[in-house]
Image (cartoon, rainbow, N blue to C red; front, side, top):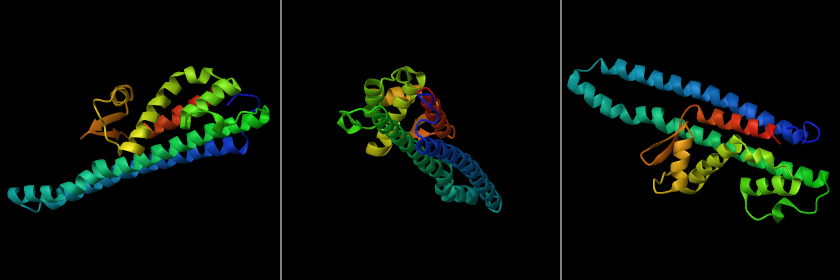
Length: 207
């Protein structure tokens, strides 16, 4: 952050940086654990399968398929979704803190809650129109953050379901390289959450 003195929000800014650092560390550790657990399961399945003849082996693979796909897809998606939403909500809260801080610092009469809208868009209006800092919202980072907002809305309101007839859904899929679609659901790959955190960090540097 480089508006007035750094850090502009004191403890609030330090806390945001700390949350991002902690999340990044936890994400990396968790992704490593997910990879190891999947590899361990694959090794176990192959070791046990070697005890059977070919017909029995195929039956065993079928029997273990649910466990395999849980480790390959289900568990990673659950934790990535949780990490993403935690990062998103922390960033959203931090933007609110910026608005509240400068309302007091600049002795503004207009409060954030007086602005129409909600979430990131309301904070954007307050920071750009009321505080007078608009250039960060013209950056490539804000463009990405708006796509993250679409992912957030899909997870929160539509249980992650992808709708190919929805223009915003299609644009999100096309423009975010670390997001894919499988079985009509948005899927986050192992790089997505780190990308999100780095984008939030770079955006806040512009304010």
